[in-house]
Amino acid sequence: MLRSMEPFRVGLCQVPAYPLERAEENWTAILAALDEAGHQGAQLVGLPECSYPAYYVRDARPYDRPGVRPFAEVTAVLAAKCRQWRYWLAAGLAVPHPDGSLTNSGLVFDPAGEIRGRYDKSFLWHFDARWFRRGREFPVWDAGFARFGVLICADARQPEVARALAVNEAEVILDLTAWVSWGRTMTELSTTQCEYLVPVRAFENGVWIAAADRFGPEGTSLVYAGRSSVYDPEGV
View 1 (spheres, rainbow, N blue to C red):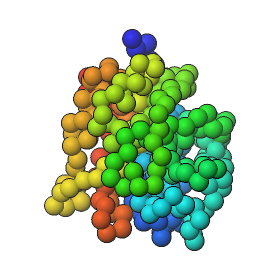
View 2 (view 1 turned 30 degrees about the vertical axis):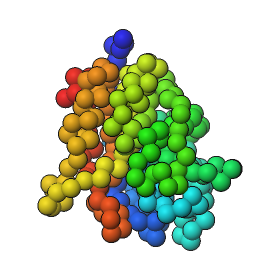
View 3 (view 1 turned 60 degrees about the horizontal axis):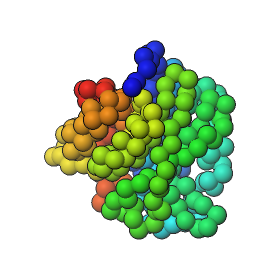
């Protein structure tokens, strides 16, 4: 059962999509969005799926490519932003591991800049299955003002991912996403996830869901809808 929560402010960083070759432009946009969230007084911030270095990473070693910042540098800067603005951050990143594998993850930082854990995308879909290792754990963090968990994009297509987080006592779920979309114009871009699936996940489990999405084209084959949204426990 949800406890009574005092109001708090969520920042959803709807950043433009960039291909891997434009990682530095992408990084600049990410930092600007994180600063804007801080200026707006956000206490809990979400960066979309694979915000850095890209979603279409092409292989399991994207951080070895020219122009991509080292992963340790990326996490150090994100930690500094959390300390600067005193917020919790769930950052959608491609995360490399010592065994050479890569996960599509939400890395969670606290306001002191400490990494408090990681959620790895469980339901790998399309490009994901080529180079990412699937996750099998569904952690929840207590931020004081709320208990929150993370799911990533296509995880919302599977009822049990959100359900596992709710069973683990999440009150809020951050959906770090890259909603592949359709539409005749940029303003008409949409997806069944934001219109139907995510509201249903919120209603099924009686939780708040806050979805942070990328927008626009990444390369020549992917277009993201934007449509970052907050859904209440009734799916509205």
